[in-house]
Image 1 (spheres, rainbow, N blue to C red):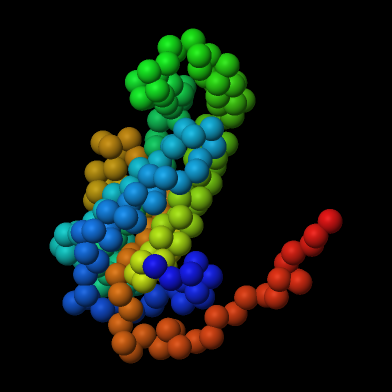
Image 2 (image 1 turned 180 degrees about the horizontal axis):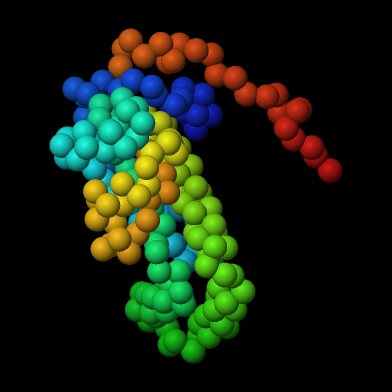
Length: 210
């Protein structure tokens, strides 16, 4: 695995994938593990991910992605979702899992549970959705970095019809709602964007040390 700065310097938003090249199961598992290990607010993990490998489904989603070629030509299409049930059930499930995995009594987590319930109680439905979607964006960056370190290409995308995605992938039945899509695979040799120099502002323009 390469140095992380070198990894990030070589990644870019791929515009053209080679449809003949596929991500191995081993590497896909590592990418999904990076999703699992992502930090989230209170560790509530209000997300899910759908991995689309079926070419017929990718072709169907292509129409509802403004005909962006990456959707149908990628090796795997990762659909990053937020949970639709953002009630106190999130807290209940987390605490139950902590009790089960830590072998500690539930009352040891009482302060933590009360803090999370108080946090969620202060948010209306719109703010809960905004909060959950921000967590998904944190997960996106973990996925981008993992892909870069594994020398797998990717292209984060917001341009798609969320309602159609939710319908085609039956996300409502899974208590999920799509937020972002991330096609992954390997760049085509004739993707001209691979040769475009990466532009970023200098650190001096971005960082202020106090």
